[in-house]
Length: 177
Image (cartoon, rainbow, N blue to C red; front, side):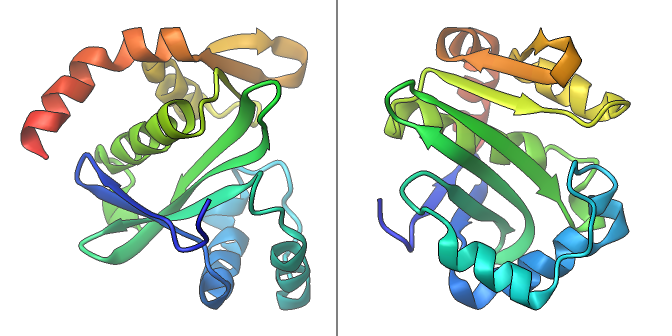
C-alpha cells in the first residue's frame, strides 16, 4: 500500500502519516487531554518517536491524520493488521477542540473502517478502551462494537455487524458529501 495514501470520504480526508509529520503527532499524543485516554501515558521523546516511526511496519500499520479543509485535526489508525486472520486494532483521537463534540470523529472512523473492510479485506476490528472512558464506549457502540473480553476491556466489530449498523447513516452521509 502506498506511503502517501490519501482517502477522502464523508467530508473528511485521511492522509497517511509521513516522516515530516511525526513531531506533530508526538506533540498531540503527549498532550494530557489525549494522553489521559491512552494505555501508554509516559512522555514520548523525539528520539522515541523517531525510533517508533523508523521501525513501524507500514504494511501492517496504517496511521492517518484526519483533515478538514486540509487542516489536520486528529488521528485515526489501524495497527497490527493480520492479513491471515483478517483482523486489526483501530484507534482514534481528535486533537482540535472545535471538532471534539461534532460528527467529524464519527465520519473519520467510518472512512477508516470502510478502508479496513473494503480495501484491506479485514473481517474484524478489535480494540481496547481505557477503563472508565464511557464516551469511548458509547462512540464504539454506535458502530456496532460489542464487548468481547471484559477483563481486557476489549471490544470487537465484525464486518457484517458494521455494515448492518452503519448502512443508513452511510447512505445519508453519501448524499451530503
